[in-house]
Length: 184
Image 1 (cartoon, rainbow, N blue to C red):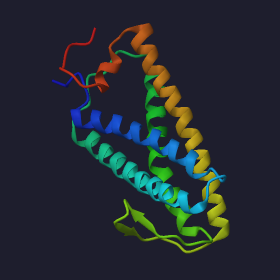
Image 2 (cartoon, rainbow, N blue to C red; image 1 turned 135 degrees about the horizontal axis):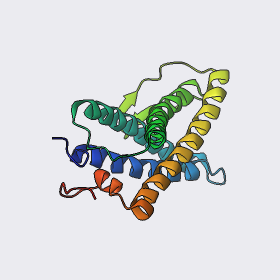
Image 3 (cartoon, rainbow, N blue to C red; image 1 turned 30 degrees about the horizontal axis):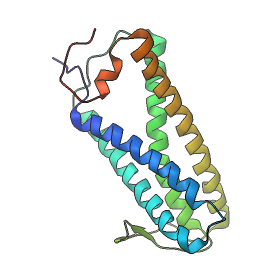
Image 4 (cartoon, rainbow, N blue to C red; image 1 turned 180 degrees about the horizontal axis):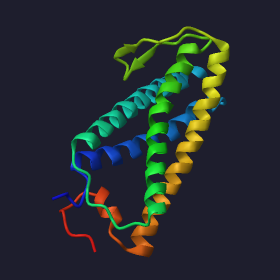
């Protein structure tokens, strides 16, 4: 028999990833504030890079767990809704993996080479050297991916809220902590 909720570890990874993305957005806004001096922004860049790599690892772990653990019972959804939900989820996973990759390529190709220190402890090797064209392309792609992520996340959250408050079908219970109770 399939569970009614996602495994607690998948649930925890879902909400932890969301929290880290919110922190990333805040860090990005502050670290790009050019009214602040570069020295005071340096630690923010290091935190942003470390959290980005952490998000990639958590998303990769979550994908592995989704393959290993049983998926919860499905709600009866029209085919178009099931396809839309799967497409949005796939887009979210793609953005969550591509954002850290483009971020790493940005710092690797940057004209000024600044080491990436994972939480201040571990030096992360840069896979390429300085390259202005790659640097500029990755900056644009990184921003486009964030816009796509924010858009897909808004669609995802909006659909979840629609299910919760309009359809009242218990969909959100599948990704929240608690006992495995029957869905309505």
